[in-house]
Length: 147
Ligand SMILES: Cc1cc2nc3c(=O)[nH]c(=O)nc-3n(C[C@H](O)[C@H](O)[C@H](O)COP(=O)(O)O)c2cc1C
Ligand SMILES: Nc1ncnc2c1ncn2[C@@H]1O[C@H](COP(=O)(O)OP(=O)(O)OP(=O)(O)O)[C@@H](O)[C@H]1O
Image 1: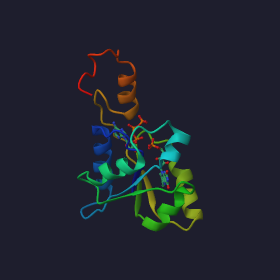
Image 2 (image 1 turned 120 degrees about the horizontal axis):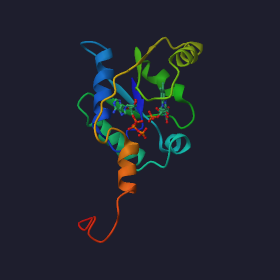
Image 3 (image 1 turned 180 degrees about the vertical axis):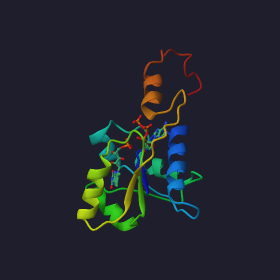
């Protein structure tokens, strides 16, 4: 199981999902849980792409076998439903592995939690960088004349 917002897909997202799938070995099944719009608003910013369209795009990605929207209130609800062997945490995801494992154990969930340490560098390797680039562009009539 891998999680995230996946708002404006970039190569880092696909790399993370490929690495997450590798954790499961030869016949691994990768299930992705997407953060709800309400979670993104509360924790990060206003999402650019709606949860419905983010889900649709993630479902189309090659390493992804299944994708679901998470809960709006309880992040452990979906873990119970999926019952994963491994939860992959991304290189810049703000979770303490030991704490998360402790919380899972408290709820009777026995999955392992593993951090993907590798970060794929690219000129636009995070959603934030893409948003900042657009934000800093000088807009005039010619900038997006066909949009
Ligand atoms: C085990 C686990 C379960 C999660 N379940 C949910 C959930 O039910 N609903 C949700 O909105 N986000 C869920 N998330 C996603 C987190 O909210 C999201 O990954 C976190 O806000 C960090 O966002 P980012 O990776 O997009 O930066 C879950 C994350 C983890 C690790
Ligand atoms: N360049 C990258 N290399 C490896 N993993 C990445 C990279 N970018 C994102 N990820 C991982 O992909 C998952 C989903 O990422 P997320 O939706 O938070 O995108 P993001 O580009 O990191 O967004 P933001 O810039 O808003 O933080 C997370 O586990 C994150 O750690």
